[in-house]
Length: 361
Image 1 (tube, one colour):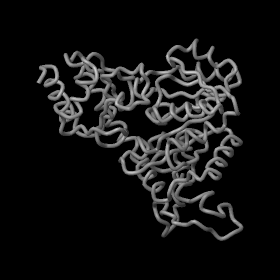
Image 2 (cartoon, helix red, strand yellow):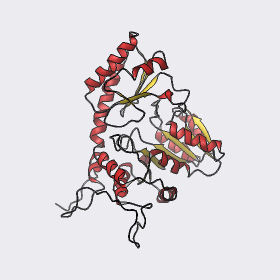
Image 3 (cartoon, one colour):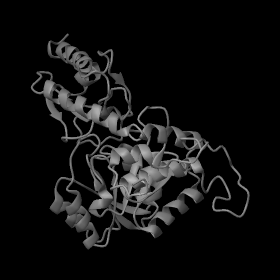
Image 4 (tube, helix red, strand yellow):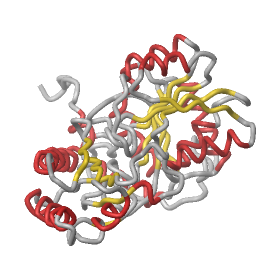
């Protein structure tokens, strides 16, 4: 019975069990931090810019969760950069008009230099996106989008792009592989800012790309090696430690987000509450635009005004305070990254601030 094969493991079990050393006496339970720039020649690693056992352990877990080979990077934006380097000179990239500002800035910079062409689309209009992919080299999108929280029809868009000969890359940072697996829907590449939900504690910066095709994965590894955008061994160790608790953190944060959406509905200070139905990011649009939204982020005790997301703590910010944010994002939109605190405390803190704004105080 001991040697009988186990059934396929569920994702929350994979997050805990994958990427560990062999179960042998006196082996550490966790892969240790490997602080090495140089290895004895003749093996697979050779040099610290090419590989590190601490990266490999993190990559094993994420790769198994997403269903491909994972390649870790120094940051999420470095992972994006490696993917965009796959686009041939003059190639067309189709992407949502509402996307992470760093991604948009990378694409715009390349377009301004004449290296690529970019078409911005409404990712919810599946037919229009499919038409825009005619002659495209790559379809890149987020679902949910940041910060509008629009959802894309993944299977339909992936199929349409492939019919037109385009690569498909999906930023899966908000959903995580516990809520959607774009590679299983046929995507070529998945990208993560591991800074966010995967690591989950707002204490490191890291990114990753996952691919199913071996040759595509090797090209991504090549970009990392040549570009040098490698994570530190210690950050990889921390990211893996955070990834172990992804399931319980995401479950709790998602439950909190859903409860908050119910409590915020119909509040007189709000014009709109946006929530895609899963995950832990909620966007609210305040009546009156930027002024009340800026006021809100200074009226709370628990909610922290910060630009990142995906940590155990609850953060929020008005996204249009960033000049690169899309002009179609409302001035009064505040993106909430819901953490794992007690939801009654979170709701009380947020609602007292909104009540003050609604009364004009």
